[in-house]
Length: 170
Ligand code: ADP
Image (tube, rainbow, N blue to C red; front, side, top):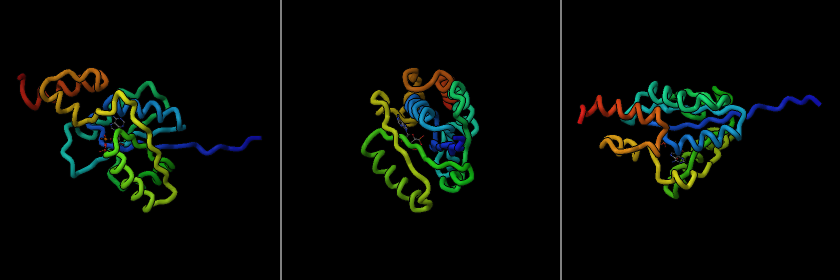
């Protein structure tokens, strides 16, 4: 039998400002569940990010280089339109807490309303990253604190540079 199986393509959308070890855990686990995983940086004009979209993409590219079925992209369209454009069927999101759950449920329900073909799949955070967010990492790094347990080394370096630029040597 030579039936062609449809490729399972998932999109993991987010701000990734910057990518943390919590995101990495989700990316690694999701990449094992799908044929292709597209990590898509949301180009959101209403947020004031630390890293530009290109810098965030570059960091994501560096830290996912060992995962052959993961690709990095960005989008500024409605997520369901982007899913259509990429011919992807599943949205992957991570959940850390009940607060995340409430927000994510609202988001998933909205996306379902806009396109009922699109499925959202949630992955629970690894317990050791349940407190971890990009904002926490930025806060610690802005005071020159140690973030080596929280982000990949490439991100740690990039943040050190960024805060040096922003704040000067002290
Ligand atoms: P957004 O602005 O879309 O929330 P984020 O980059 O903050 O973008 O998060 C992207 C996705 O990754 C969200 O689903 C978020 O819940 C999830 N996420 C963020 N940090 C973690 C973590 N430490 N463990 C698991 N999932 C996480």
